[in-house]
Length: 314
Image (cartoon, rainbow, N blue to C red; front, top):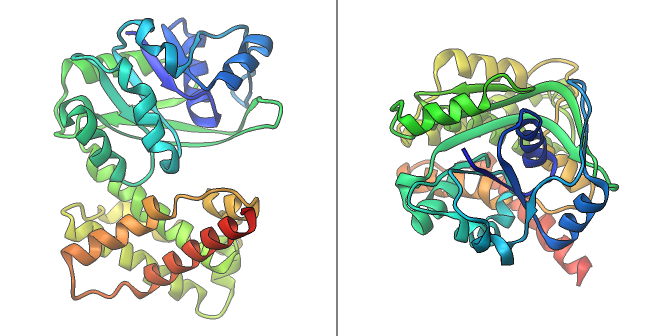
């Protein structure tokens, strides 16, 4: 299975490196500067599951992708704000038999990928990993948690998803083939939107929020708003999943924060529209009688941050 990893940053770089470590046929689609860096220094990974150095990993830039031949699987793990450019870059690699496995948060990317390549080529997927790309280009994996979940969006066990599952097995991450991938993507979105919404709004970790007056109530109310949208969309989170999420989101003393808060604290770009804005839009379309006051407040705050960041950068 020829696999194209779009990008060699923290997420795609980690999973791609582990696939390459196993001997899989992996190529990284990267920008020219990253290609030059990888050619000079190799791909370097530091991880509790074992460090890895891959000298001169196979790379290709967008302008040469059409010459690289066909790919069976494309793993897409960019940030949502880079989605349009990533779609344009990877387009030459998409053939009649290509499967695209996106690992983005939310669901808006499915609509964009379906529109460009056809829904039949787009799998469902998600991942959980704590990793970052250091200034020197090293991928630093920060915990033993690194899972990847994938599945056909109709729940079938097709030959291609079985082939993807075979590819992912036995490596230094936790793979799982799901027969309810859309539900699991919605469950993750509900959790993430609540976590990102609360921690960015309060500029604090979960434990700090629940220690404040009415903090736990705020977290629960925000989770309810997010759950309302999922339910109206036909993907009500399962009771056990919702209970586990509530426990994590109201854990006393927890230092858990969303990566979106860390992006804000570092003055970086954020996925405000993809994670929060799209959730509100779906909710208002499906349940126009619902106001979603907390999600709206969160979104206003995130867009104000974006406006300030843009003004100060001008």
